[in-house]
Length: 269
Image (tube, rainbow, N blue to C red):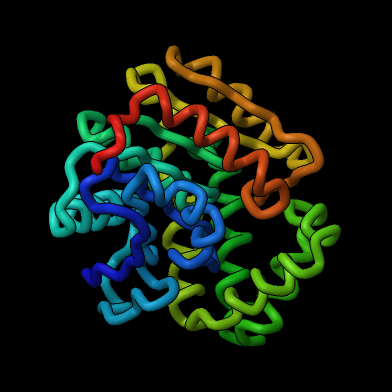
């Protein structure tokens, strides 16, 4: 599978891997990564199907086990071993799967607006049906119409107070290939995802959970997650919805910087 990523910083510094959300790309993190690149080697991959990472077989299966092995292979190729791992939304779900599979590679784990999955089978079936309908919408109406509809969801309502940011996010999202986005939203749907709730208690490294106070759905889920993780901090950011790092960038950077200092090695000259 292709290994498309961008990086900032000195490769001799502690690796900080940032995984973007659905419709995003590694470039989605550049504004954040600039604030970390003096002290960390920032690695920002394009998840399979996103950005420039489309030179792979679209007919091949895609699931979180495959994503986990893809990320492991990417880290081996760079190469880096132990990492600080940050994930947002879809990237957060991917990060959690990777951390559960390869705990010895994790220094710290930061999850923004991410869920361990849906336990109830009927709810999973409902979500899969919903995402299947979305795949049909993407292929029928095209990326531009789908993106406009996607960001009208209540989940992203608070982004409307940041018109320049939401405009840039939409423009970038519309550059994705519709066939790939249809595949991603269907095959990586929470409706197909194996729940990881039972694995949360096994996480021994420091975990930071971030949600926006206006994202009530995920704030509720993450509160429950925090109850299962012993070495965990949960921060609810005010005046933010699902995309905390875009809506409250300065506070997000400050939160993560303080958290990373727990396990960071000294800066390498």
